[in-house]
Length: 98
Length: 331
Image 1 (cartoon, rainbow over the protein chains, first blue to last red):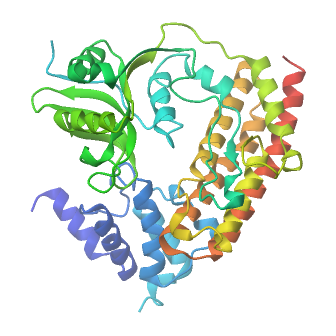
Image 2 (cartoon, helix red, strand yellow):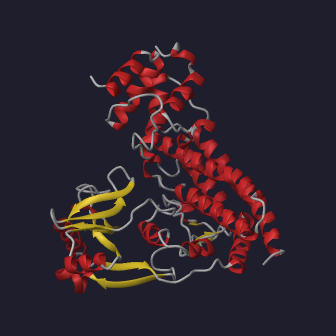
Image 3 (cartoon, each protein chain N blue to C red):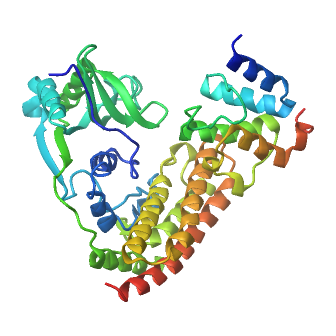
C-alpha cells in the first residue's frame, strides 16, 4: 500500500457511520471511489446537475429526512464534507438513521 | 493535415436549447462577442398555450441563438444538397476553426445522444471536433441523462441520422459558424430600452384571450401559473416540461453578468450586482426543487417553487428599476 492509499484508508477508518454512509451514497452515484471528505463534488467527482439532483433525492431517502427548501440548491455543496454537514443538520450524528 | 481537431468546448451560459448553446460556444470564447448577448438577451418569454391544455409553457430567451447574432459568421447548406459530401464539409469547416451546427438529425441513430434507440426525433447537435483515427465526431449535445456535454459519435451514425431525417422530408443541414473577427461594443442605450420593455411587461398587461408568446417580467407569474397546473394535475405530471425553469436561471446569470459589466465600465460600486447575485442562487434552487419534484412527485415542493418565482419577479423588479434609474443618469 503506498502513502496515499494509507492516508485514504486511515481517513476512512476514522469516519463516523454517517460520513461512511454519505461516502457510500456518493460512490454509488459517481461510480468511483470517494477518497476523503475534502473531495470536491464537481471538480473531483465529476458530478453533473443530474447527479446533484439525485444526491438530494437519495439523501432524503437514505436518511429518512425532508430537506428544507433553503437546502435545495446542491450547487452550494462544494465538498463531501458539506454533504455530511447538511445531513448532520437533520440527523445529528446519524442516530435517527436506523 | 491533422487526424484530430477539437475546438474549445465549455457549457455555455445559455444551453437549454442547442441553438442557444451553439452561439455561446463561439461567442464566449471571443474577446468581445459576448457583449452582443449582454446587449440583446435581456428578457424571458413563454407561451400561454399551457392555460388551455398544452403541456409546456415553452420558455425561451428572445433574441438569442445561432441564427440571430450579428457577431457570428455562418455558412449553411441543406442536407438535401450536401448529404453525399457531408463528411468532407464537416471536416473542412472544423479545419478552418468553424463549429458545425447540425440541425434535424435523428437522435435514434446517435449513440449517447438524448433519444438514442428510444425515439425518432429530428434534433440538433454541435460538432466541435473530429478524430479520423476512429472515424468519430465530438458532438456537443444533450446526452441520455439530459446533461449537455461532448459526446463521441461514429461519423457513419451521424450520416445515418441525417439521412433518416431527410427521407422524412425533415430538411435539416449543416451550418459552419464562428465569431467574426470584430470588436463588439456594449450598447447601453439598447440595453436600457430592452430592460425597460422587460419591466413594463407585467402580468397586468398580459391578455389571457390568446395563446401566443409573452415576453417580459410577467413570465415569472405565468410560470407560477404553470406550476399551479401541475399542482392540480390539469397538466399530467408525467407530461411536465422538466426544463421549464432552466431558462429562468440562465436569464438571471446573464443579468448578473450584465450588471457587473456596466457597473465596472462606469466605475460604480457593485451595489446592484451584489443585490442581484442572490437571485441567481434562488433561481438555481427553484430549478433544483423542480427537478427533485420530477423525480419524487413530492407536491409540497411546488408551493416553494411558486413562491420562488414570484419572489424573483418582485426582487428583480425592484433591483432593475433602481439600476435603470442609475443608467438613465449616465447613458
